[in-house]
Length: 203
Length: 203
DNA sequence: TTGAATAGTTAGGAATCCTAACTATATTTG
DNA sequence: CAAATATAGTTAGGATTCCTAACTATTCAA
Image (cartoon, each protein chain N blue to C red):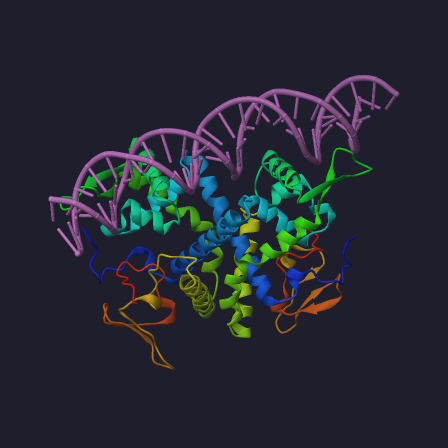
């Protein structure tokens, strides 16, 4: 019934499977870290994620519908989350003049404080990455970007803010570096963005 | 209020942060894929994860307590999950003779069928990884292993089945490859395991 | 053989996140 | 310009997740 020690488990047969297993493990770590953080602050995981997101993104992304897409949840779920955050005094709604159905979500000072403190929750992942050599970092980032790009193309992840899918991006060829037409500057591999504030989806 | 296009967002300032952002995105993808899969099969995400886990692991790991540790959940949560899977006819309990408190969880044929079909849920992640060059794969794996090893050491992930924390493992130095004392063979970087069935924790 | 540790369950409840149906505003178009 | 349609967000209600606390039953240790 038990496997012989010399009989490799399927998951161990090739490097690809091992990489996927590693990514799964890391995904789980994110879940655990987020869950720990949320218990400490008496906030739900999604509430924390929303707070952190609000800290770094511009007005047109600070809306219920956008957040629902961003986190792959329904609008009611986000609506509830926002209501709860408002009751806790961590965000406020700013209704817009030209469209009174909609509003922009702003962090209150307390909300900013908590989001800032909390954004450090991924520090534990940062430590081992920081130790890598520059070349390895570049390779790692490129590999991960490749994975995400594929997930974008197959529709698993809907929201896109990476250079690879941006109208302003001109990919490098051979020794020529990439180029961003908006920033008007060359981009090294290690400068490719995952979440660019200026991203504009190319068709 | 809006950022100037030339004012880089904090998240874009350095490669480390971008790598973390990428890992977060991929974590989210796993969550989405798992959730989609679970809707299709009318199983909860944790139920699916348990089924897949049972497909690949040996008797001493097929128990409530072990599963609870594995997935960072409480025993009652797993207990419920098992009860539900049993009612659906996907697993059966085999009580042990020497300890009647405990039982080993076995997949039924139907359970195996579903787990097997479902294990493919990560195929969408496999495609882009498969495209990488061998060198890049090795680098990617090593980098991820470094991250996981750190998460293990800091207690974020409790269960460990990687070569790096195994009594049978003798790490390579310089050009000398790693060595597994149990398999009695050299291990290339790309052969380092994430989830070895023979893992034995070194102190 | 008594006390402590361990495996798993039950009970109850807070929170997550969904679908369906809704209000209200904005946009299109005939 | 009025009617139809689309869009932003909310409400209501419910299935599910996952927890804590308290429990039973068994095993191990002193």
